[in-house]
Length: 172
Length: 113
Image 1 (cartoon, each protein chain N blue to C red):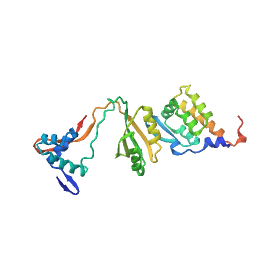
Image 2 (image 1 turned 45 degrees about the horizontal axis):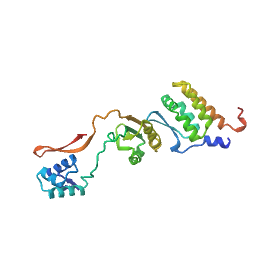
Image 3 (image 1 turned 180 degrees about the horizontal axis):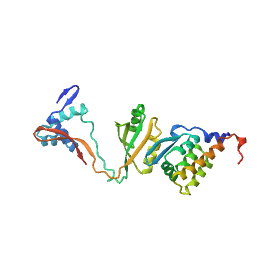
Image 4 (image 1 turned 90 degrees about the vertical axis):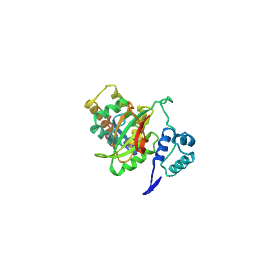
């Protein structure tokens, strides 16, 4: 583990630990050590440093809302804004629990793309009409309601044999 | 203009304005914060937006709850029965709203009916 320009550079052992934790973050350091052929104290030390450096940001539970019987609709909402207001609108959107992801993008126009969930089309419309459209600087809004999810990936590390590493998406 | 008229004709805050959509979540970029502005926007907005909101009852709800004009809300609700679309809807809605606006905005002694 090395630092360059205040950025932590990870070695092959770190990457193997991250990959294993992304597969199952609940496994013990002992189990992880046995699996990777390393002492549990080494695992502990590496994980602690990656937590301190915020490379490991959090350990969380992935919840399947459908299995809980919660019917939700998902929409991808594109918000066109006046350029000087884009950051403020994006920040306001990010505060809303209905908004899962927010991105700003510069294509032909400066715009915001947000992933929004709602209990129904009516509540989705109410949220957009009452909480997004009135924000200063919003010019117009385009909404696509998701009808089928074919893939949803999480950013994860793939550690190939012979020490070659690369990053790929994993499908749930 | 009497007290009731000024209530209906006032400008409402941004968060209470009417925002024109063409379908669920698709905002046209046009809004109205007063009856006068609403009357103007009815003539300029995409007619799909008029069809969308009339069918949902959004116009009458805004007029009654925000502008607090029950008479105009009732007149707009009546339009739903005719299943109007396209410019026929625009013309009728425009007529109903502008007639009401003119009546409210006119000086009291010029109101005859």
